[in-house]
Image (cartoon, rainbow over all chains, first blue to last red; front, side, top):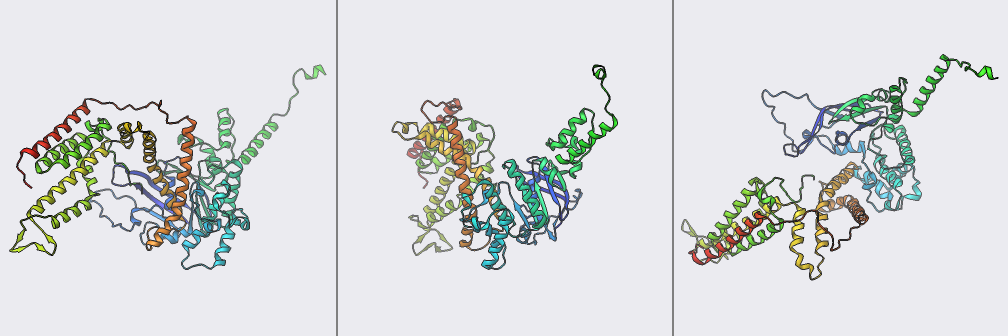
Length: 321
Length: 276
C-alpha cells in the first residue's frame, strides 16, 4: 500500500492555551515495498505523523463530530490536505479505521509494555481475534500464531504456554512484535524498535525487520534515533524537523549532506563522521553510508594513491648497504 | 485523555497565591464555620462579600472559579428540589387559586426562601474551596497539611510519611495519564475497541490496559524507592526542608479578615431581625 500525504497539518488541543502545532504542511510519499526510515528530534512531529498512518490520531475532518466550516471571506485558502494509505482516505470520517488498522501494523516504543495476557499464545492472538469479523476456528488461530512466533525467531512449542512476564527482555519484545504482525499487515510501522537493546540485540532485530520486509509485510516504516541504523537499512529516509519534512534522502545523499544534518543537530552516521574529518584534512572520499561501503571507497582511494606515487628509494639507504 | 487535569492550579502571581498554605487551609475551615453559623441571609451576604474579595485578589478569572461549580451542579439542584418539596413551612404557595400541595409534597413560601438559602450556602462552599485549589499547588497544599497536622506526630501518627505518600501520588497522576494513553493506543492498534459494545464488553476491554498499567506503576514505584534509598532518604526527624513555610503580613491580614467575618456573622445572628 502506498502512503501519500500532502499539506498535512495537525494541532494538539486546538483552540486552547495549550495548543501546539505538531505537523506543519507535511508532504511525503512512501512507495509500496520501501524500507523507509524516519529520523528527527523529540518533538519534530515524527511520532505524530506515524500515528496518523493507522488512524490513532485523526485529522479533524476524520472525526465523527466534524462539520465542515465555511471559509472566511478574504482569508487565504490553505492548500488542500491529503492523506491516503492504499485505498483508505484518512481525511474522510466514513473510512473504516478498524479495517485500516488491520492493514497497518504499529509497533510502539518498548512494545513489551503492552503485554497483558496470561500466556504468550493469548497475547499474540489478541489482535487476530479483535480484527476477525466472525469467530475464528481454533486451528486458524493456532496456525497464525505459530507462524508469527516462528517468524520472530521464537520456539512455538516451548513458549506458547508460558507467561509473557517470565520471559527475558528481548523475548518479550519479540512476542510483542509477533502480536502485531500476526494479522499480516501490509504496512508495518515501528517506533524505535531497537531502543534499549544491546548491540547484538539491535543487530538481531534489524535482521528480523529485513526478514519481515522480505516475506511478510511489503512496506516497513521505522523511526529511529540511530543514524547508522537508518543509513545501513533504509531505502530512503525522511528527516523531520520542527513539524515538517525537511529532506527526503537516500542513504548516499545522507552521507553527503552532513552539513545540513549537523545544522539540525542530528548525529551523523559513523562513516560520514570519518569522511567529514578527512574532508577537513583535505581528503575527499565518496561512498555510501555503510561502514562496508566506506571501507571499500577508502581502500580504493588508498590504492590509487599508491599507483600515483610509486615507492621511491629513501635517501641514505643505499649508502649504508 | 490528556486534558483531564488533576489539581487545577492556575499559575499567576497574586496576593492569595502568595499566602501561606497553612493560613489558607485554616481560612477555608474558618470560612466554612462562618457559612454554617450564618442563620440568615445577612450572614451569607457577609460571607459572599469575603468570597468576592478572595476571588478578586486571587487574579484567577471568575470563569475558571465558576467552572468548579459545574461539577456539583447536580448536588445543588438535587438538594434544592428536596428542600422545595419537603420543607415544613406554613404558608402554601397558591398559583391561580390552586394551592401547590399534593400527597406528601407541600411547596411553601418558607420552603422557597430556605431553598435559596441552602443553594447559596453550597455555592459559596464550593467557590471558596475552588479558590484554594486554584491558588495553591498540590505540593504546597500537602506541605501545609503536614505542618498543620504536626500535633498528631506527638501521638505517633506518621504525618510525614502520609504527606509524602500524598505528594508522590499527586506527582504521578500526569505520568500515569500519559502511560494510559500510550497503552490504549498500542492496544487500539491491535484492534482493541474501547468505545463500543455493552457494559460487560467494555469492562473486559479495559483488562488489556489495566494489566500493563499496574505493572508499569509497580515498576515506577520500585525505581523511585531505589532512587530515594540511593540518596539515603529515611524520612528521619532531622530532615530539613528546601521550602520553608513562613507567616507574613498577608497571612495576618487573612486571619484578621476571618476573625472579623466570624464575629460579624455571630453579631448579625443576635441583633438583626430574621428574614427566614
